[in-house]
Length: 77
Image (cartoon, rainbow, N blue to C red):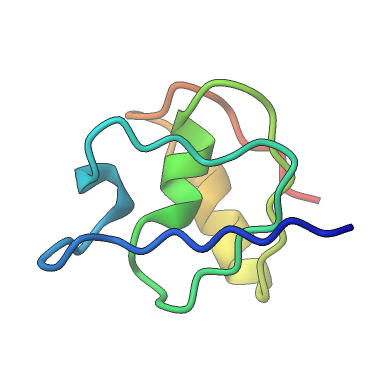
């Protein structure tokens, strides 16, 4: 049976990184409704491994090249 958990950001939050102690759940599919909220960056910078599916090649290239402030490397396929 599927477990569905909805995570709602507090009012006034623009980026997921602004939510104190927020960790993306493991073994999940994260469907963010709003683009530009920092969801992809948050997953890249938290501990552990992740597979991130994005809709465009340009987004993959962007995430591969912005390495100066990341904890982990990104391998785009």
